[in-house]
Amino acid sequence: MIPGASGVNDSYMDTAEELKSHFTVVLPDRRGYGYSELTEPMPASINQTHDTFRLEKDTEDMAALAKNLSDNAVYIMGTDTGAVVAMRMLEKFPDLIVGAAIHEPLNATVFPNRTELEKEAQKISQAAEIEGIPAAMRIFEYVMKPSQLDMKVLVEDTIAPCAVCSPDTMDSNSAESTKIWMQYELRQYMDYEVDLGQLRKIAHKIAWLKGKASKGSLVYQASDLFARDMDKEASEVAGGHFGYVQEPESFAKDLSSILDK
Image (cartoon, rainbow, N blue to C red; front, side, top):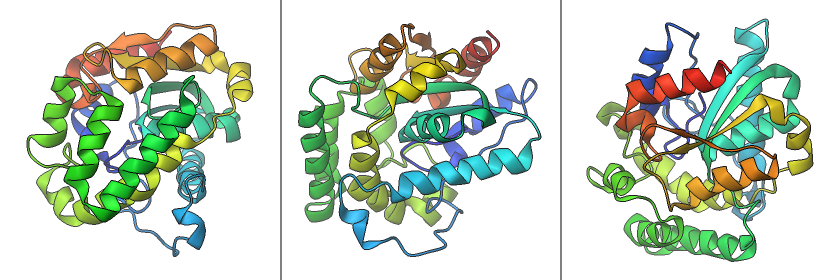
């Protein structure tokens, strides 16, 4: 289960508890988040919108886990920017994956106004660097159009992508990971051009998921548009964008049912 904006596995914990009777569940912290450390300096190119250093590292890390923890192909699930990692895995390591659940990917490839969305992502990044996270979150809310249910998760306890983390994880992770996500990952993963032709070849492996309470949001639309490109329909699952936090039991039930098909 590849985490999204927070980068840490805490957000999946309750859903994982519900899934573990059916699956062996692996919950990584992505590199540079939580307790997974960056083992080399980020290159100077990291400031460029279309730089893929972090995305490629995430993809290679998830592939390495799959190879080392299983002798067989695995199921993967990713949400938000973690869903972009899952799609890159499908492009680069399709033989490692028996099935993939792509939940509300934060990626603009399939949008007709992609160029405009890229510019808005750049504004969010610049606001985070110059004015701080609260200013960036105001632009984020305008662009992403999250549901009120999801905004409550984002801002009620802390203004951060790490709002769904435990207090212990936030202490070790929050400030630096929020900076990384807002300044680099958001725009780079959102702007990454997914190889739709490659994904069409393995469309039978992919389930596109959207939260029942996410209707109207950018990421809900993304699931619909990606699925439509593959001549498929996105499946609704419990909760909003953070359904795995909001309704873990129902989310796990929906996910298991979809992966079993």
